[in-house]
Length: 313
Image (cartoon, rainbow, N blue to C red):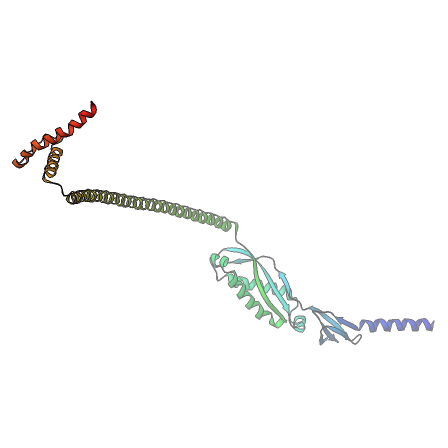
């Protein structure tokens, strides 16, 4: 029997010693009390406490935490009641202050968020509230961070998750947005038609300019072609005249080199007169010195005809 009692006592002592060994995990802190008074804050690692005298009063999570509060009713400066849902990101920096600073820290942050939000929204109108989320977030974070410092809490961010205006305001906003969209659509359509008309007019203008330019170029080309044809025709006539004059000059030169007698010269004169009167109703006045040649010409013709007649016979 005494042996059993010793074993029981040993087991109890082992259990008590084991309960006095505490391991603090990462990102946690333990607040230790001795006889009901704050003793120390245990960080990560292995720790020992005095049995029956020391106790772990609070286990604190040091990670950043997120709290999503229910929508809070607020009234704007222009007396519009709406509901705003907020999200607070906070982190415990001092476990001792967190354990002894406030009874229920999360509830305290929620109430503080609601009152701060009402104060800020009360200075803004509806349109400003809907378009000033970043400003509201900044003001709330600064106010909450300052108010929660005595509790060992640091507020990192505050976000307005959702802004819910009254149903009548929502209907009016939808009608306003619809009217605005229709107005923009009408403006875009008018601008498109205007640009289309301008493009068509510019196209016609450019087409007319191109047609006029083409007609101008065609007229210039026709004039140049006509000018070249006239020049070529004049050059041809000039060459013909030059050749005729050259032929006449060559004939005169050959005639002069042949040294014809007076009878031949008179005969050539008669031929020139005959050509001048050929096929024309012209009157030719023959000088007296040429009349004496007529008989000579006649005799020459007869002399030429006699051999021809003999050949025919």
